[in-house]
Every structure is written in structure tokens, then in C-alpha cells.
Image (cartoon, rainbow, N blue to C red; front, side, top):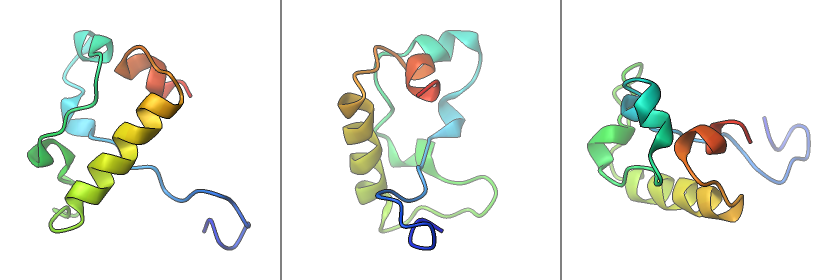
Amino acid sequence: MAKLFELDYGKQHFPFRCLTGLESLKRDELPTDPAMWRSDLTGGCSDVCADIIEDAVADYHRVGAKNVGEFLRQ
């Protein structure tokens, strides 16, 4: 889809498993445990998981988010 619209970025991955309540929005970092990034819909996240986590954490720091809730508002 990103190529179709000539965007500089593609699909953003997010570890939705870490969202367990309002308090989880106050986390100051994204989780790095690959189990937290596994998709409940597809069961996916095998050998590409490290790259997905690395890219998402880099994006988190790039936007200067102070916590997960702030990152989601970006």
C-alpha cells in the first residue's frame, strides 16, 4: 500500500498484547519480548520479529514519545 501511494513508510507494527489497561499506556518503553509482538489474529511473528521490534522501537524514539500512550497519538 505504501508503494501504491508513494509513501516513505509502510505498515507500523505495534505490540497490542502490552495493552492490558490504562496503566499500560504509561509504560516508558515498548516491550522487546518477541512474545508480546506475536499477532493474535495471524499467529505471526517468527524470524522477522527482531527487525519488527527494532524498527518500532526506533520509531518510538524518533518521535520523542514519553510513553506508549503518547506514541499511539502520533
